[in-house]
Structures are given as C-alpha cells and as structure tokens.
Amino acid sequence: MDPEKIVAWVIIMLNISNVEVKYSNIILVLKGVFLEVADEAVVCLLGANGAGKTTLIRAVSGMLKTQLGKVTEGAIEIDGQRIENKSPEYIAALQVAQVMEGRRVLEHLTVEENLKLGGYTGPGGGRLKAHLDVVYSYFPRLKELKTRTSGYISGGEQQMVVIGRALMATPKLMLLDEPSLGLAPLMIKSIYEVLRRINKEEKTSMLVVEQNAKIALSIASYGYVMESGRIVLDGPAETLKDNEDVKEFYLGLSAVGEKKSYKDIKHYKRRKRWLS
Ligand SMILES: Nc1ncnc2c1ncn2[C@@H]1O[C@H](COP(=O)(O)OP(=O)(O)OP(=O)(O)O)[C@@H](O)[C@H]1O
Ligand SMILES: [Mg+2]
Image: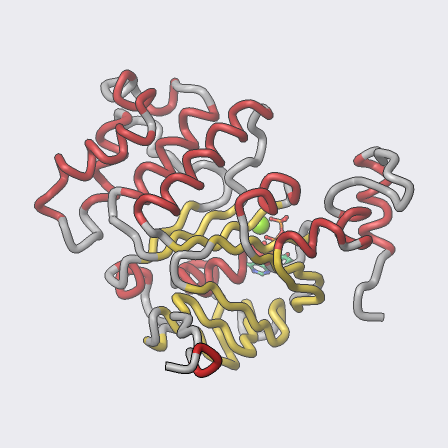
C-alpha cells in the first residue's frame, strides 16, 4: 500500500464541543468550550482561579447537577456516546472516574474501605480483590496503611487513596482536578510518576486540571488554557512550554527567564485579558 495513503485513525475518548454551562439557569460560566482527549492520551487543562476548569470536569462527570448546573448548549461524547446532562451513575458506568478537587476521602472509614467504595461502580464489581492488588502495586504505601482511619493519614496519602479509589473502577478515562493542590514538591512528583505509569500500563486516558503547569505539562502530550469560560490557547505540551504567555502566567518566568513571585503573577493574571 502507498504509505502516503495510510491515514492515522485516532480514537477520541472525550470530545467536548461548543459546551455552554449555566448555574441556577442564569450564571453563564462556560461559554462554548471545545476540547478533545484522544484515547490513551494525557491532556492537561490550565487556567487561573475561577476560569471554569472544575465546572468543565463536573460537566463531564455528571456532577454539575448536584450544584444546580446544566449544560445548556453543545455536546459531550465519551467514546462516541453523548453524555451531557446524564447522571453521575450513568457516566461512571461508562468507566469514567473522577478525582475531585480537595481530596475527598471518607475520613471515618479505613484506607481499604475507601478503596473498596470505588470498586462498586465499575463493571468488575466482583473482582474487588484483584483491583485492590492493582492499586496496592501502584501505591505500596496504601497497603501498609490499609487498616488506618483515612482522616488520620497525611494529605499526600489521602490523595493516593482518592486516586486509588478512582482506579478501582478500572476507568477508561480519569478526570483529575488539581491532584497536586497543597502537597509538598516531592509528594507531587511521586503522585505524578504514578499517574504516568497508570496511563502507560493501564492505557487510561486522562484529563488533568492543574494550576501547577510545570508538572502537568511534564506528563501531558497536549494542553489547553482556559480563561473566563473559554479555551484561549491549546497545543502540544512541548509547544505550550515554550509559549511566552504560558511561561509568564503559568510557569512564573518572564521573557528573560527570571523567576517572578507568585504575587506578581497573580496580579498579572487578573489584569491579563487573553481575548481582548
Ligand atoms: N455551584 C455554583 N453556583 C454558581 N456559580 C458557581 C458554582 N460553582 C462555581 N461557580 C462559579 O463558576 C466560575 C468558575 O468556577 P470553577 O470552580 O469552575 O473555576 P476553576 O477554574 O475550577 O477555579 P479554581 O482554580 O479556583 O478551582 C466561578 O466564577 C465560580 O464562582
Ligand atoms: Mg477548580
């Protein structure tokens, strides 16, 4: 066959097209968002506070409803199936797992009880033990802690529990909302290393929301930048790393490479209008 005629066929795991979201029928937060995650890819979504990143994750996981939010325009497809405004249970049954902002462990339950809760939503509900072994292979620390009460382990260990719980559902697509938030640099590195392994070994597609652009761009192949409910920039991670705006606003580097203080960057972020 003529090699010129071979066309690469990329399967799109998540396809978000012109999505508009309103809270309480009036507060317009997402204003026509387009975003794609190819099968087995890691894609990151960057953006300042209040840009609408969590809202987009909720729109995909079905959790918008719990916040009186609704997709009022556009389409969301998971592996070719339309899912906008479907229930969280419906979407979980499509093997989509969400790691919510703020490390939501059930504090009174043990580590292993928390993990088991993640297993009931997936198709392999009867294979809990095998799934637990997979989680413990990625996070050996959780095996050591399995009988401990989750409220009394460290923040980093709680984040492992939450990621492990998502993994219990053998997800095709993982949605991660700021997994690095509030963690020490070494813990962030080790958690991202595990995410990279999960992506490679389990072939799990991932959409990772982060304010920590450096770490997110280090595992993602493609990235998007959101501002005020719109995607204002997207491209391969390698290209975004070199983009002057990304460097300045998300990596904290000025054009001459000097490190800016976080306060300066916050200030710039507020003034900067990507779309003006
Ligand atoms: N339940 C809600 N009802 C009304 N408005 C909301 C609700 N949740 C979020 N918003 C508003 O929607 C906008 C986007 O919020 P969202 O949490 O999606 O942003 P974000 O990019 O995740 O921010 P952060 O980086 O701070 O987590 C904000 O203006 C926020 O006040
Ligand atoms: Mg958020």
